[in-house]
Amino acid sequence: MSNAEVYKRTLTFSIRKMFLSLINLAIFAALCAGGFFIVDKATNKGLIGLGIGAVIGIIVAAIIAHFLAYALKAAQIAMITKAVTEDSLPDDVYHEGIRTVKERFTTVAAFFLATKIIKGIFNQLGRLITGAGQMIGGDTGETIGSVISSVIQVLIGYLCDCCLGWVFYRKELPATKATCEGAVIFFKNGKTLLRNMGRIFGMGIISFLTIAGAFTGVSYLIFSRFDSAFESLANEIAEAAARANETVPAFFQNSANLALVAAGLVGLILWRAIHTAFIRPFVLTGVIRNYMKSGVNNIPTENDFSMLDSKSSKFAQLHRDMA
Image (cartoon, rainbow, N blue to C red; front, side, top):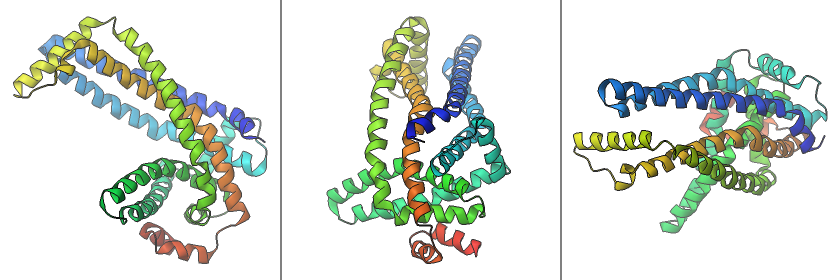
């Protein structure tokens, strides 16, 4: 199966993830707007209501992500892994993916424990690589270290997903040992796997410029029709600053500028939702294919585990617990 075929067959997960994201966004917007107008009418302090609505919206979004979104993400990774390693997928991809997740991680807590361990290992390895750049010294070293750190944070997200795919692939092993193997695969084949960087960052930049730019523009055209609401918000910000004896930049006292900021936030949120649901899985398919090929052709041994013990205390602890 080609990457395009795998992507099309697993698109059902992307559609469901996008639907969940839109629900989250609608709930968040409704809570923010409702909090602002209700408190503004009652006490003339709408900014406080906006903050309360935003906090409640974040909590609701976190609950949805914890109990629903995680299953869609994990199931999609499981099916992508199955496709690139077995060159086939079942007819009912969605239900097979969910079944696989439940079989491998019997509880939500078990899944998040595994992902926490994976992220901890790769974050430690990332800091090790970042430190190499900073050791050069001076401003150059700091700049190199910062750039490397930013790049690594993006890569860590993909590597965690690849490692999770390996945990699904090595279903005959305990999740702990499969996690260790997944980390070692990158360590042993780093140069090969880093060839995916161009694809990862190229697609990310293109999608950001096109999707975020388009939705920011459309959102601003819509928000500009609600001058009174943003004028009220600007007044609230000015009054809150006056009560706190603080000075607010003139930019944030202009209703048109606030509408632009709100539009930018909508554009950013929608870009993230669309990129995560549709663009990232396509890139991830190719990355997982290369990762799995490297791992299947050279399954890590106990000697490989020992090599990584000295580079990550979290990995070493996991290795000891596994023994």
